[in-house]
Length: 93
Image (cartoon, rainbow, N blue to C red):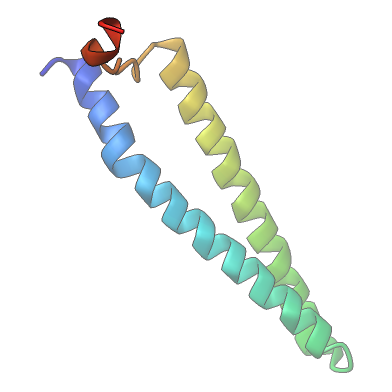
């Protein structure tokens, strides 16, 4: 296994599933805090806390999506994910 295959393996088996898990958690965190903002609109101190948490959730989602874009950019640039599927059975048609 060379370095290119190793990095491709890390991206496909470790980074991609973890990214999906963390992104889902950030979206749930953001939506939970938005619901808190809606429910606690009569208590100003709790409303300020929920707004701050919602802003941090939005920042977390933005950072994760940006990192995902960078990983895909570098993966495509350095051709790290070029697994080609062999379809020999279709060549005979």
